[in-house]
Length: 304
Image (cartoon, rainbow, N blue to C red; front, side, top):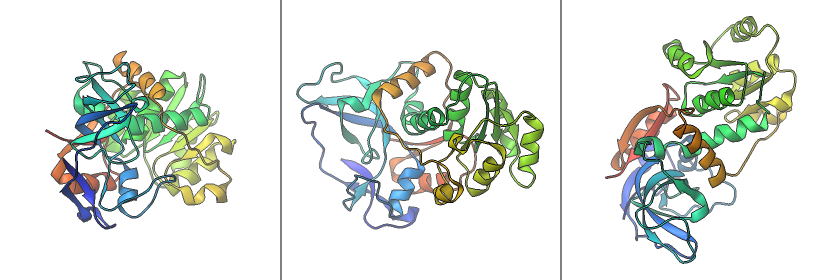
């Protein structure tokens, strides 16, 4: 099979399409012919030399940790899915490929109404936002601040906060993305100097919780605005967590949580904005695009 992988750590230029043996489904597993694979910052970190906990990197290493496709091989003891089932799912690596093998508890059925591009881009950021927003206790009546709210992760967080009853959702974004945030149910506010004062003007009774997908400046602003530091989460400025007395928030992805997100999508309560699509042989350009941290929505690789 063809797959996008790297043979040495480095910038996006180390990504290349290589040939690998076709993987085979074992007991409790399925093989999926991949139609689309989402691109995440996680992938870029691995490409640059980071090794996730509990993961063995073997060069050349195939990247990608979310996918959508059609099951073409079913292992022993698998129930609920069959050859031809359209699914979306997750793995820690190996999804930028024509085929990926995963355990059956890493997939859910794809709704007929969900385009392949959107299916390939739901799992990672959707579950990441879910884990973060649950960890900081977002619920009815809350005023929530979401930094980088127009990005894929931030946009999911906005929509989940709305679904879970937050009264006021404030999202930081560049001015060009303000109308998009309003369409999701957030009050937009610009980045930069004076952010704390602008947020206070929008939330005179204070901010209950904050989720950062932007970086150090956003976390420092959140500390000024949120009284309870247990209700601040960053997925970017990890180096400030200990210094600021914040919690390290982690969580395992699950098919049950993914199924809940898919149900929200099917009920019209969750939108997935696709920023751009790239063919497999342009995985390097996909990484360049996501590393700019600009624009709204999700970047996805497509495989024909």
